[in-house]
Image 1 (cartoon, rainbow, N blue to C red):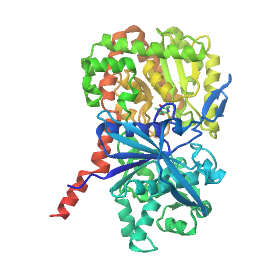
Image 2 (cartoon, protein in one colour):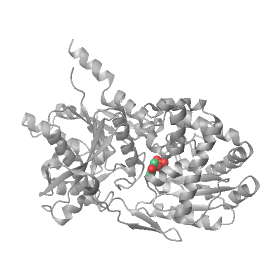
Image 3 (cartoon, rainbow, N blue to C red):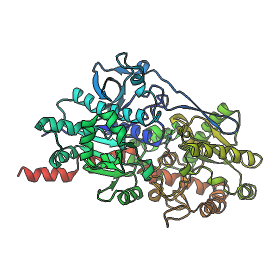
Image 4 (cartoon, rainbow, N blue to C red):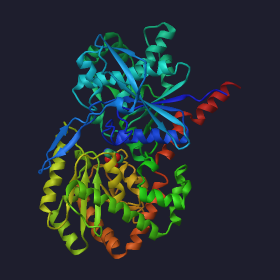
Length: 574
Ligand SMILES: *Cc1c(COP(=O)(O)O)cnc(C)c1O
């Protein structure tokens, strides 16, 4: 029997550990969770990313909510092993040397998934080229395109050296690594000693590539002017790309490059698959809904509870379904402990002590306009009135805005302004420097996870899945994963309804207040047992499904080693 191919998972960001700052948000966390589950499941996989020596950034907020960004540097040599290989790339005619560090992810059964972090900080390179692997999502278009050459083409060259004998399948997590397809095409051309790509050669590359798209807004897709592409890649490579029809409106569009060269394409939730199908006519877009790595995102109190009651849950997350058999008392206790740990950390960081008795809402994710962190504050008088008449509430926020995202920065300031206006009735705290460690505490320790994106822009969203694993129900707009995970009053609550495409700000805010006033607060304070039942259903129904163990299994079945491919091969050999 032929050996299974090796899956090479490429991602511009990968969240390996909280203190290794090689991630910015959901995309990187998903990448890390994917590789962790692949290791647990024994899937033959390797990860490829950049070392990002200066990280994304460390966020500092002043009293008015103005964000200041500081480098978040780390020293790969302190924790990682360097590989001896040196890869040579040509960028704008210059020779650029690339090396890699290796980070090993070990699965529950001992299977290892190595992650290669590419690095250009070598003395042979010019100071500028040494900086190419410093800043995640930093710099100008020129810097970004150079980084994408290092990721896609450098990563490909490294894998060829490390695994010369293996059949490889490439999984492009978002379009940043799409230039790897150019390397694959060049290798095919070299084999047949041709200069011009034929449909047959393109097809041969396609058979090796899987592409996951994450952005339901055209403006979110990475693109570079043709002039820049010719400058960085040189005329010969630019010509080859031009011939493959990945040029849209005079730009090289990395999404179209990936679409063109992938034999399997998917969005990250059912709704997102539909939206993407509409965006990319002519390309079949499937859907595999995201998940989170259950063991990583389950808080210690809940992990201890599951270990006692459903010990198989670590190895097989489907067993979380049987959380239905755990007593409400034990669920309530585990959550109370997670809440206490969160509130203690909030006090340690801010000096402010919140009450364990009060319904605590959490909202944390990248700060950007479409996520609308200010929807909760659309009508401050109404919110105050609800807190006074129906039941107290307090709110914890977190999230970084990209340094160039002025709209996102304004969102943070608005939360600060609302916090000021509400200070005597609803405590609102914005925690600095949202990262994996804080996410772990927040998603587990609050009582209600809030998400208010502008539909249909939330491709999936994953923090609500982390919350569900910890018995924290969501109150969310019906977009992304919540369309699938929401059962009203059972796993949480919906804000607004599903009809229409664009969100109606006023109507959605009214629905948010209405749900808090009529359903959430009365349940929390009036029928605490029933609230714990919602916690338990969130674990059993959503924790058991919205995890990366199920997700990676779906990639295996549908994208990496699809049964239909096996059948086609079987027919060929008859
Ligand atoms: C999970 C996570 C995210 C993604 O949150 P969404 O709900 O998908 O927006 C972003 N940042 C960090 C640090 C996370 O842990």
